[in-house]
Length: 218
Length: 218
DNA sequence: GTCTATACTGAGATAGAC
DNA sequence: GTCTATCTCAGTATAGAC
Image 1 (cartoon, rainbow over the protein chains, first blue to last red):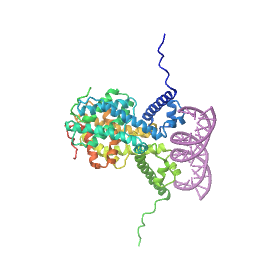
Image 2: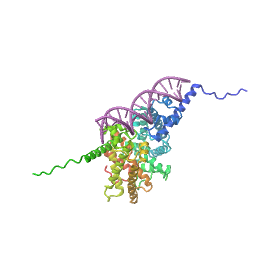
Image 3: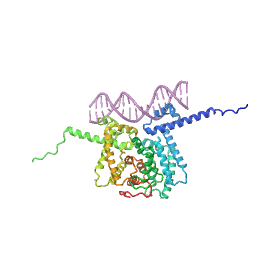
Image 4: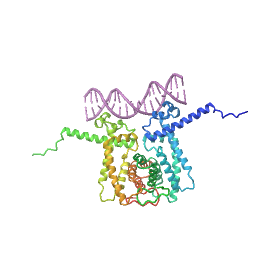
């Protein structure tokens, strides 16, 4: 018998490297969760360390500062959002793709995600604005969304009286809209209903007689 | 000649009392300004003291803690907002009054005001939720706005598919919408244009073919 | 009642053993 | 690379002179 050997244990160094990367991902996940709960200013490195289950000092082997850590979390979020955009069927209308992006974003937030824009903290804003990787990703995402907005306008689906920049920020702002949190805290509406009403209000506004948006479910 | 004496200097105690009140108002104003710039979590009592031009220790003669001081600022803001509502002509439609309130709120924010809801800080939220005077005023204001919402729905001016609570929070959320800050930072739009687009988007949504809101100026 | 000075706490970051 | 222990600094709140 010449049994083929089971796959060898990976070389020690590469094993350690992968352990390192797994831990780093765990740190990013924990930071993301805590950011969603506490916000940037009251987020403590101690809390992150406990959440991951490592010592605070070890965090600094992975990220040189709190700002760098939070910046990495934000970059990862923006990148994922852009991936979500790129995976949409190109045959859909720009309007439908914007609505799908909005729903995806709201679902993420309700599932414990953080907003894309540092709306909650001036300190975080200042920190990110001097973090090139974040600015770069933000620019990339904004250009992708901006393209959709222009196309949707060309296709006659968005109000031409509204500036492109205004519409872009309006989408970002829906991702950090506190209405989500307050309605959920109220407990009277299901998550799905909250998302539906947010999408309806975003595209059709609050007033009566609004045109029904094509993707509306209820 | 029996010249009538000039009005006497007020009695010493009452003079001191009024000085005290003037200073207290100055403290509230300074705190309000700094809250708008820094947010609650990074607001330092040192900063407030410098802004007013008094010593940090003196602040504690007026307010027993940072939380109490910020709470007083928020109560004053809610009270003013309700006064604004009460001064509206009762002959206006509920829809027009809601729009006027929204414009007033946005103007205030652009002039350096703070949002009505503690959306930016979990710590502030916790603090205010155990501050009866704030809860009381918030309830009063919410009932006033809620009345208008119900009336506007009865008059057929608001979308009946949207829950009353959703619409209420949507109004509050517009007061803390970061779109304001980002558009202003961009510098490409005038304040008046920003407000007009916010109001248009709030009532009519982003999509094309929206009904024009009666109060729209541009 | 306001000032200066200070006690106390919490949090970011670092040092040094293993 | 991870741990424990510590440094440093900022910020809330208080004490004591005037």
